Image 1 (cartoon, rainbow, N blue to C red):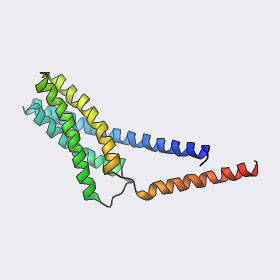
Image 2 (cartoon, rainbow, N blue to C red; image 1 turned 120 degrees about the horizontal axis):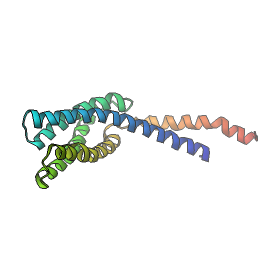
Image 3 (cartoon, rainbow, N blue to C red; image 1 turned 180 degrees about the horizontal axis):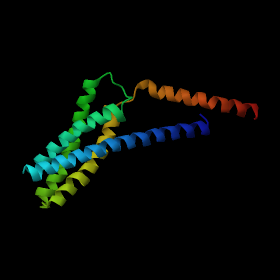
Length: 173
């Protein structure tokens, strides 16, 4: 593979990753709003305990995020094993839920930071931020896997696109 083809391949992969991150972020932003609203309704409107409210809010956001990721961010991925996909999504989302609400519990109960602002920052900024990085990695690695042929097709297209250029180089043009 020549330097130009390698550059084009790397650039193509980086552009794909950037689009994926942008879509994942947009879905996550909607999930964040859902999470934030449900959390605050549970704590301040219904008077539930903060960690219980956090778990409820995260669970509702997980449902929202699954729909957004399945039907938009990762709509072109393998759809043959939906039950496996959903099971893995729930497993990794559950780990993210533990990360997010574990940080909330540590802040609220362990450190005594019990104000509404402290609860929202620990859950919806710190916990959600760390949980999001984990979820992005796990979803793209294990849950929404690319179709095996996709990479092969892209490599072939890249090769075919480079072929006319290689012919010109060989011909001395």
